[in-house]
Image (tube, rainbow, N blue to C red; front, side, top):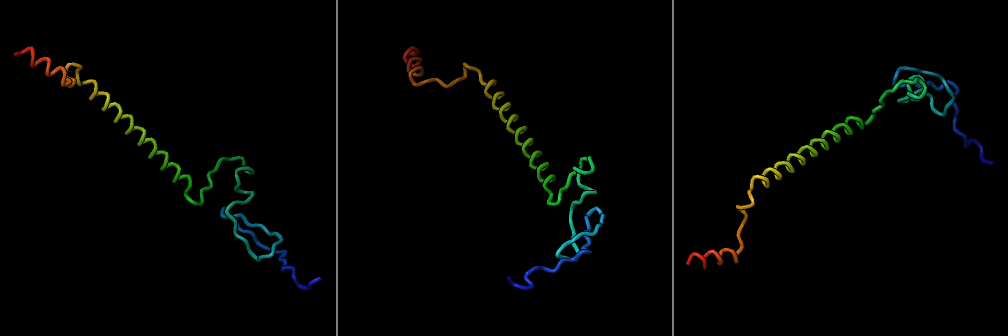
Length: 108
């Protein structure tokens, strides 16, 4: 067996959380920094809390607003087209060549 292949283990590793909580544990590093610990994790506290380290919530909210704006614009465009179509009476529709020739022959 090889000698000295195991890493050095520190029994007094200090773990510091983003919420300010610190505790001592066993690790191969002297200090650790974590974003969530048992003092601030929603599962342990029972409180709903958004942990947004990369702006995902803001990004999702922005995408949702853009989607709603696009939906509104599509509905408005559809309504505008419907109004325009409704304003054009059936009598003003284009006449065919056959109808034009028939009218010309009748007027002679």
